[in-house]
Structure formats: C-alpha cells, structure tokens
Length: 324
Image (cartoon, rainbow, N blue to C red; front, side):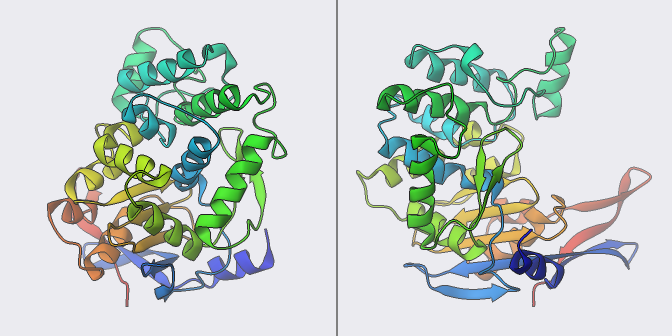
C-alpha cells in the first residue's frame, strides 16, 4: 500500500461508536468529505486527498465510460444494472442475460469470479434449487456483461477485456480521472477480477456530484436517470442503497466493498465516506449523518442511520456517528 494511503487510514479520526448498554464497546475510524458544485472541497474529516480503492463505488463512472465507448442499452434498467453490485435476485439475472444477448453473447463469455447471490433470500432460493456459485449470480455480473457488450460495440477483443491495458479499461481510466479531476493513483484486481482504480475520496465525491447534476441529454445524465429510475437494479429490493435513492429526490448513490459509500446530490454536491477498517456496519450510519449535515433529511436518511446493537436478540445499544 502507498505510504500516503496507509497514513491517511491509520491516522483517520473516529467517525462512529459502537455503544452497548451505554458503554462504548468499539470505535470505527474513517475519512469523510463533502464537495461543492464544481468540485471544491467543502468539508473534510481526515485526509481525503490520499487515494483509496472506491471498489464498486466506481461503477457508475465505469458505466459512463462504456456509454462513451459505444455501449447502447435500450432499457434504462439495464444501464442501472451495468452500474450495479446487484443482489442476485431473478430480475437481476434476467437483466444480465438481456445485456449479453443484445451483443450476441452468453453467460459463458463472463469472466467475473463465480459466487452465490449476495442477498440472503436469493442465495437460499438458489441453493435450494440445487445450483452452485456461478458468474451470473456474482454481484458484478451486470458490469461484466456491459463491459463485454461495449467491446462488441467498439470492435474490441472480448477475451482480454479485464486486462488493464485493454482499450476498454484505458477508456475507464480516462473517464474516472476526468470526473475525479485527478490522476489514477494505482490499479489492482477487484474481487470480481476486473481492474479497480484508485482515486481520492475527494475525487470520488467530485465525480458523483458531476453525474448527479449532469445536463439533460448527456451520457452522464443517462447514468443518473437510470439509477434514479431503477435503484432496485443498482442494488436490490432489500438494500440500503436502493432505499436511500428511492427516498431522496435527485440523489444518486453507490456502495462499495471495504466500507465505501458515495453520494451525488442534484445541486452538484458530492459526499463520500470510507471506513478505515472496512466495517460495513459503520458505513450507512456515518453517511446518514453527512447527509443531515448537508441539509438532506427524511425517513430514508433516518432509516439509513439506524443501526441497533443486539443482545440476546433485542436492541441493547446502537452504532452512532460521532462526526465533530
């Protein structure tokens, strides 16, 4: 890991307390940032200019790169699915197959890591039906199907689409750097097998603000409008990211592995949180507090920020944001 990234995370401020029976049992450190329309840093908690891997929070940016490269998906829900870490519900699998079929491809062309459905209920149903881990049920299959379809549209090789030097991945790097207003700091292999590109939390916030406030008729607006119209394809019917998008007008959001959360607001502001230890339980609670401080309130925000600590199956405390 780069020294700057290690320093930013190890020295990050405490952003959440885990409270059990009035006693602080654990703490979670992290960094958080809000950017103004245009990309200037509005507030920062910790070092938000050192790079991190946004993981799946990069996906809407990657979808934008695919649209710029010739990807044409007839239905907006499939554009949302291209940006998804989907739950593996039946409608997700049907959508992935539709993306592949539109390019004359099949499930056999997918190169993402086989896995079971992300959603507990969908996973149980899948296993009960006698199936094992597959590429299509892995949560990144929408992105991989769209990457393959982009290669067909652009006339690029479909066998090497995961190579960082492939024209598709180079186009993604260019788009991510443009929206983040900074250079890609590192490239590694994501959990699904595709490249993951590092930018700073501030850069990620700039990118989400730009997409959320995009002018009608642009590819950025196509991504935004698809996510807004079909958040269940971006996440799933039981996912917090889906409920947040449904509950706040104009907002787009994308969760990522290792406790990354990115939000874009319709006025062009961006919000990002990265929990230093990768604990997902702190991620939504901290983001809810950032949204409140940005003036975004409502039932969806309150639900996002509510996380019980259980004892003997009943609430005995809560995870609480402690943003100064």
